[in-house]
Amino acid sequence: MMSHDPAGLRTAVRRQDRAVQDDAWITAMLSQAPVAYLAMANAEQPFINSNLFVYDPTRSAIYFHTARDGRTRTTIEANPRICLSVGEMGRLLPAATALEFSVEYAGVTVFGTAHVVIDTEEAAYALQLLLDKYFPHLHPGHDYRPIMAQELEYTSVYRIDIEEWSGKRKTVAGDPQGAFFYPYNGEESIT
Image 1: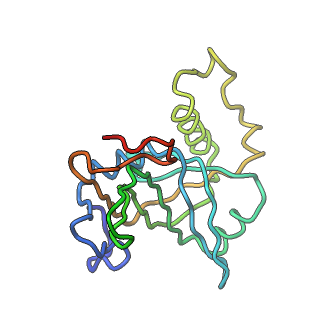
Image 2 (image 1 turned 90 degrees about the vertical axis):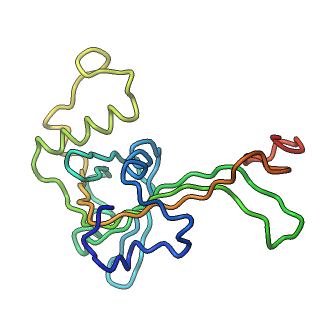
């Protein structure tokens, strides 16, 4: 597992039976997740933003962008320490007692340092990675005009250098009685 904290205090998963130590699974989750939730703090005020993002395994980094000016840029410039999370929900699992109700899930938490990307080549690279992730069927120069240097003046591009990560998931084998996917569609179960 990627880690620069030998004690693993930030990435420790309480339920070890749900901890994922497989870096390939973690990178796959980061690559396929559609939205990330970015936690930041400026002084004593925490903020969280949902963002489109792209994981770049060649740089062990995550890229995203926002408006040129705003809270995200101001916060990152004041305190570049971040936490980012992605996740997905599986089946909801009813039970005979309220205490035993549960849900399948999978998620990754990333800790790192965010930087405003100043280099125009890196910024264009990151924005193209984002376009390639969300619009893989469209190609620059064929389906749309490629990114122009002057357009970079309208956005802030960020790189999160990943320091640590952890994965966590819960799955239940088979077809548990009454299990269903959210939202409930009126059927008794998926089994």
